[in-house]
Structure formats: C-alpha cells, structure tokens
Length: 420
Ligand SMILES: *[C@@H]1O[C@H](CO)[C@@H](O)[C@H](O)[C@H]1NC(C)=O
Ligand SMILES: *[C@@H]1O[C@H](CO)[C@@H](O)[C@H](O)[C@H]1NC(C)=O
Image (cartoon, rainbow, N blue to C red; front, side, top):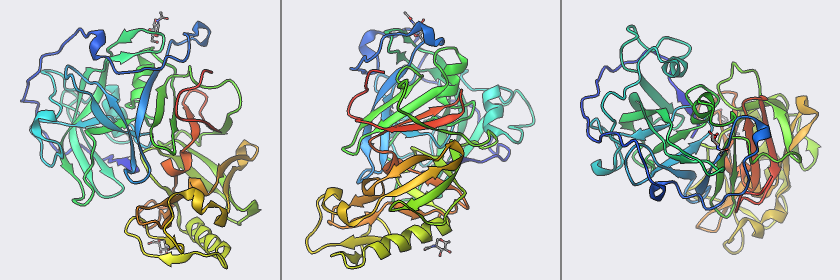
C-alpha cells in the first residue's frame, strides 16, 4: 500500500482525555525485542553508533504484507506493524476511544498523559509540509493518512518510549513521535491484520530519521525480504556490505519517497522503448505498479512471449492477469521457464540494473494459476509513479541511504543477516 499523507490543515480537534498507563521508565532484559542474531561488532570508525535489527514476518502471497514486532511504551506485548518505506509516520490503532479500529479494545494502544506532540514541533511541521499543521502552535498535532486503496487513518501525534536493543548490546528506550490513530476507515473486504504501520520514509517523522536525529543510528536502513517468507529489517548502517551493492542516486529531495530514475525497461535483454521511468521503492506495497504505458508494454510483451507455450488465460480472484496450465502449478519454479526476465536500467547511475527475473513479478495462487504481479498503477490513481513493491525486492538486500541519497540492492539470502 502506497501511502500519502494528506497535506491539508488538520481537521479534528479532539484532545487527549483518556489517560491510562503510566509511563514505565525502566524495562528489563526480559521484555526486550527478541533479536537472536548479533552478527556484527560495534564499529566505532563508522561514527554514529549502532544499528537495530528486527526479524520480519510475512510474505507477498497469500498474506500480502511484511511485518515487524515492536514494543512501544509500557505494554508487554509488542505491536505488529507493516514495514513501510513508502510513508513517514509510524502509527498504531489507538484507544482514544477508537472508531473503525480492527483490533479489540484491550489490545489498542493507550497514550500516556501529556504525551501529545504540539503543532510547532518540527516533526509535526514536517508531517504537514507543505502547509501549516494548525493555527495555534500550542494545539495538538493532528494528522490524516490516506491510502492508495482508499482507506484512511486519522489521529493525533504523541510521544512514547521505544525499547530497542542495539546490535552492540546496548539497550535504549528513546522517546519517539508516533501516531495514535483513533479513526480508521478501511475497506471491509481488506481490513488490516496489523496494529499499525512502521513508517520508514525519507521525512523527518520517520523512525529512522528520528533515531538519527537523536544520534543513535546512521540515517540508513535496509531490508531483506525472503521469497520463502520472513526476512529481516535493519535501521542503521552496520549491515551495509562494503562492496557488491548496485547504487542508484535518489531523485531530487523534493520527492518525499525513496525514488530513483530515470529508468529504462528491458524485456528479455532488449529495449522496450519505455524510458524515463521514475521508480519508487516501497516495502509497503506487495506488488509492483507500472504507469499505463509501461504496464501496457509489459503486458503485451509477456503475452506475446507466451505464444505457443502451454498456458491459457485464467480468471483468478487474486490478481487481474493470470494463466493456467494443464495441471495446477505449485510454485513459480514450475513456470519460470515460460517467462522472460525484465530489467530496469537506471541510466543516470551508469546503467545500474535491477534484475526482475520471473520470480520477481509472478505469483502462483492457491488455485494453481500463475499471475502477473505487476499492476496498472494508473488504474489505482498513481498517475505517472511507478512502484517497486515487495514482489520485486524479494531475495535482495535493499538499502535506503538517506545520507548519501542513494538506493542500493544486491542479491542476498534473506534467511539471516550476513556479517558485513
Ligand atoms: C551502542 O550503540 C548505541 C546507539 O548508537 C550508542 O549510544 C552506544 O554508545 C553504543 N555502545 C557501545 C558500548 O559502543
Ligand atoms: C491502465 O489503467 C488506465 C486507467 O484506468 C486505463 O486507461 C488503461 O487502459 C489501463 N491499461 C491497461 C493496459 O489495461
């Protein structure tokens, strides 16, 4: 899900009136996030400290989501959050009380007394930029997020502690701003299974940027999403390999997403004539989206290449374009020989290539059909944006470096973090 923050003025003035849990300043090792892996030693030479690693759960199909479990505040049980490099704000379903929450009341986040972030806070200003958050700087910071699939979350910005274990062994519970989402509207057919979203975008409100501003990590993050499901996420630069990464510069920082371009689309090693694509790397999107022309071209080249192959058009309720074989397929390996590789070539970066083998754009559904995991972005209102979703980032280490303003990738085994 590619998320957009609405930049209009805050519309709801609802003050924090429900105060329950008192802040618990101390926490024991017993309630730390479980990080079994400690792959690297602290490297003082890298300057700013350390990194945090989270195990990731989920898959592209059938779950359509990758999540991490994160502790916030005093609740013992971690919150399950959608890993989203396509938006800045971290928010959780919140009991203020809540309208439209999908979790039962007991498991909703309860904000602490006096934890509301004010309108003149730089994080609130950044969330609403361009545009002013509200008339009076002392007001609370309201926000609204709209989803590409027409859901939305409305809430108020609060601060709370995030107990984290760094890979150098240190424990900290920095106070970070997060959204208390008390008014959600989700499509009935597709309510989120998570407690909220972990916002890892380029803006000042993102968790990685907040941790960086506190001097705890480098302003870098990366993820490795396994095709088998699961994987890992890291915040900080310690797990960035010193070599072997394909780097492409991020587009102008006016862009609030991790985007790079222009890219040219190749099919089966040959030019398709589709050029000048701006690509957004968005872990919050399960599938890849191409704007109308690139989509049209891809679809007709794929269809053409299937001529004479034992595949027939099929209707499957999971995705719009599917094929079936004589017998149901069990996995993409059963069909990958019928399909050709796609490549995105980033021309500004000396033609650095993002390889999209059939596994990076196909799924096999529970009905045994093979479906195209590249969707028509124009149809869902993405305009000329193109999105690299999880399906195309699987089994790759993908790194978002906000300091050097570049995005990198390399093939990887995502089952466990590698020593760098
Ligand atoms: C570990 O990393 C944290 C976060 O960057 C830093 O504050 C701390 O000083 C580091 N501890 C050691 C022992 O290096
Ligand atoms: C993609 O979506 C747009 C907008 O709905 C539509 O006009 C166009 O025909 C679609 N392209 C294909 C190939 O389906």
